Image 1 (cartoon, each protein chain N blue to C red):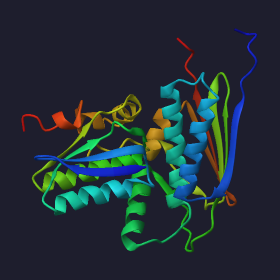
Image 2: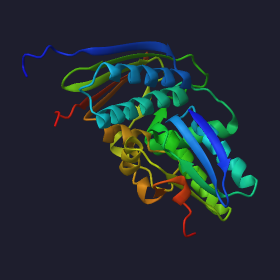
Image 3: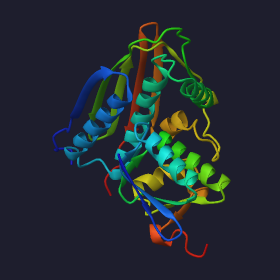
Image 4: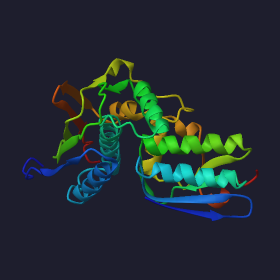
Length: 170
Length: 110
């Protein structure tokens, strides 16, 4: 067991913060799983879930895009319900995301750096939305799907570190 | 994500293949809206080909459920794969969305 060479499958991706980037990241993650057979389906699903939620949050809330009136109202409602709010940026900004994922024998980790306005997240207020709600589940799912999640913000942007331990086989 | 709508005797089926996330969720909302507006609020979402779902996809399902019920119908889900069921359970939505083994059996009895 201990003689096995360490598996270090990594993935790196960068690009503009939009929903196409989220899709690219999930595509790349699916490709990574092909080389990481030691990762169980449930670990794959939960890690992809957390990644999708964080990246979607950055793409939809981090850019400060006004969008249509209906969209922006929904975005604000989503943020409030999630306990998250993008820093109040009066002007849309071009946000970039840098993503690095590593799958070793013990854990799946992701580091996401964005250039968005600092997000303000009060983890203590993050709760799973009621079953009738159409939004507000994102950050609660992130916490449920991971063993560790860390967010730090500076005026340059946000860094998100996600970690899910891998269940031992059998 | 791909989406295909088909009409059956007294219900319609929306089949979703691929990942149901923020990029595809509006398609599901629109498909449900189109059915409801054309007087077909009895809807089954066939998830047999759905590889992944996140909170945006869940939101679209709940939105569809409300729209269908307001119009006197219902939205039920069928053939739910394990990876989708795991997310439904995390959010307790497996108690709200009616799960059925197949699209054909979703409206059996009612």
